[in-house]
Image (cartoon, rainbow, N blue to C red):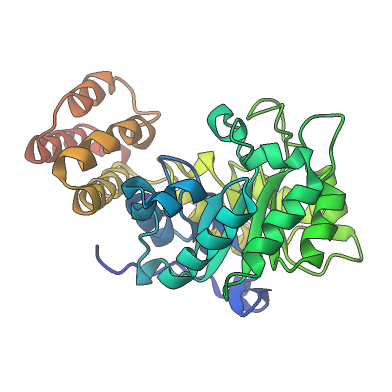
Length: 343
């Protein structure tokens, strides 16, 4: 993959947010780790359009210890992505410690622990958001990671398990006490999954707690530049983490930065930009995973890159029904020509 430089907005660089020795611009925008989405080809496109800090897909500690191919492949990071963090999840103290040593050897900028994934297959293993039900265990697992790596350790989690156990304020203090260097909080409980509105009021309480000295990043429902600015000012977080809004729309990072710096809304990407981003994503996917698997895994992204275009269903159907890279290129050219009036 070609080296890609992030977009810089000088007004945002006057102050810095620090995670240990990692310097980020004032109010950094983080790309959330998303399973089956946040792979190197996707991260490359997001980096091009302004993501300041990115994370790998979460990696099973059990998979790493077993030397599972899929888990090991997720450790792939590239110089142009930096700063980049590798995220792990698990529920066993020894496995977390050993995985921390494995990750340490791959030389990312930081190591992140997932205590927030609500997916049943993860929770059933006592990992991800399941650990929110046992704060002492969460502390032990975190300490095991901190003690077995030279990297800054960060955590991503949720408000709590359900409405009756929103324990994020206690969690934040106790994890800071065992050595984490930043905390990202999704404004929902595990019981909510991704439904309902994210509640940032508890995130703000964590940030405004005088005991908390580490950066606090908010996550959940940020899908416009206006909302990013509103939440920045209302809740006072150090930065925001963006997940689903970036899928098929990496320009969200550029648009937020521009709005925060100038107060102006950028025009949306034209059809050339859309197709070029889709093409770069496709090429990266093929290069990283091989033509067959790279094309198969790209299928989930076409609809997002083409979202909002009228009468695009026929093209979308053709894209997902071919495994030939040249044919896909031809279809993308057809789309670009047909929707040129959007330029």
